[in-house]
Length: 509
Image (tube, rainbow, N blue to C red; front, side):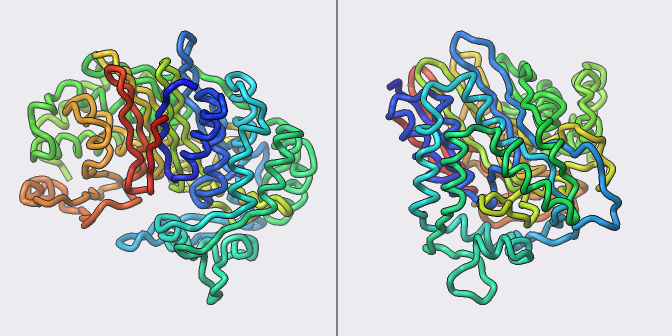
């Protein structure tokens, strides 16, 4: 067994990967074991009914991105026939609208991605890779404080249907979801994982599960048997960006998260962030303006126009707007793994908030990606048929100028791009260690609103807040700002941090 580090959003997610590594598995066996475990122990953030991306960089081989994100159906149902309605998630200091119902479900890709990556990169049998997740589902696990908080955020969404109440209701009753210290057992999901390990993804996409989904979707949904049968994992070349002597590999189009991070780095390339001082007024204002420009460029990114967005003249036009000028006016988790041989895995997955429909007998909650506003910039019900939805998820690998390497990514809907951007600039411009880079307070700009995590000294924020009069101050670290679970190998030594905003942990082996 090679020495290794894994960072993830739950202790058991990371332990699943570590257990597989100790059993002789490689980095990719561990990543897939952690993926399956996350679908058990991080139920709001991950599900076999969702989608994701794996950036794999095997030592001595070409890096590649496995795109197993969700896909639009081949046909649409008239809007008046859809099971599709809005509900709100409550973050405590702000709320966000989502849409659920069977009509919000896109074609899931997690199961296909699990098996495609395993065929290409795995070394252990799938039965051993899935064993930790099966054990967690069968034996049950105690809900921790973060999971209890997340259930509180999505309470209205998860108590809206009989299916989700049956899975996640608290034994205390009163229409409450599971609370801290209560046990979640998922026997149907355990049985399903055991069946998948033996029968493969055909069970999900062409067998009994596909038949069950297609039958139930006739009642207000849009997925068909053909949609499931025709789903394919795409293997893509990473988007590669140079930044101050470092090299970033990230998720390419048609997804938009990596492209927007690359765009923001291009804007910041001409600014000496390191010389400004971390969290100085100049640093924060420059960063906020870059985020503002990235927010405006989202439409370009959502259409996959990488050539235009990263064009030197286009970048120059936007750079002029961040250079000292006054301002003119969703459920996801991540896993990072590195070993001493230089094999890297960066894996992001999401179920949105779940659509409220659970596939009978499986414990699988399908995604609500057709009901996520940030994934449907053209408006709901206007998606093109049989195409990947764009995503902010951006599993990434940073190769620094001193021979070090770091894997990172994040959950957090539209906050993904700003969370990853700040970790990257913390690592490169301010030469922070991984723990400091991850835990440092963040800002996020979106749709005319600047959100700011406060630190001990707020006096330096005066100029920033004057420039951005529409702002929201967060008194402490919050799940809203993502979860950048990150590991690095620098000068032969592992560094790592699970983001405390999302209950992250790091295990070194």
